[in-house]
Length: 304
Image 1 (cartoon, helix red, strand yellow):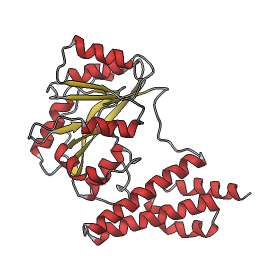
Image 2 (image 1 turned 180 degrees about the vertical axis):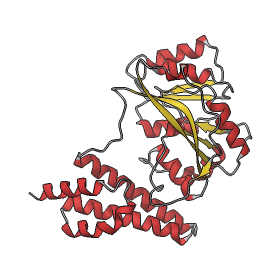
Image 3 (image 1 turned 180 degrees about the horizontal axis):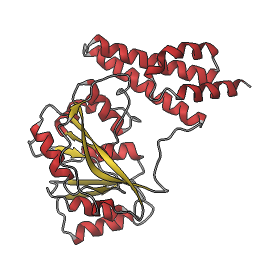
Image 4 (image 1 turned 90 degrees about the vertical axis):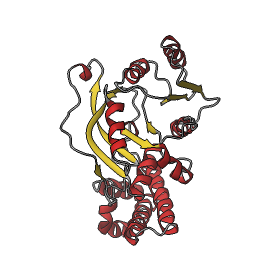
């Protein structure tokens, strides 16, 4: 868990982790220099419950959420030789009571899974859905997610994931600074055909006013940053797939991704009309094809 200014909801999330039907072996929490009472609340919770297997670290300087999550993952105890399972946790959600038990059971039954993605149920303050519902029983088996132009992009949040430490150890050298932790894990699992999804609601995700949103909207600078990030990750994945001799279909997909996002940046930054025409056959390589019209409008507005 990575924490930052989470005093309002952090204790509830910690309690939902402590109350799991299958106790967790270890909890690692990294705080990114919170300016509120988060540190005091977490330390008191650990002390009161005598949680000797919980580690809480306060960073010497603010790292940002990506580096903070990576630090937390890398602090996991490696002395145990068993293949550990790593769950990612946000600071303001509420875990389903049997989350760890059921997700760990599926991972143990299916050693081919490197990364398992589940579902969430959102709620707002004042609502406590976990008191009225229980997790479904008839949800089938996990299904593999194949690499396609659609699944190239992150389709599951980090808080919904569990992954093997052995999988992480085998790919972590490919993680570069600035690549979001859940996007990195998803991309690596897709690249190596070990990404699965399961129709199990494993957590309740709180919606509140201070929540960080990934919505791009019509902000030009934010969209340019996003496109530059996707272009960089696509270049990285293309280079990796070429180096390791992965199927030509995989390499072709990432070449198309790189080309598409270069054209999108050219259209927005330079108002290149020709890019708008060249992008029409590339719409399947968008996360959301409707973005084409938003970006075309940005390009035209920039020329006036």
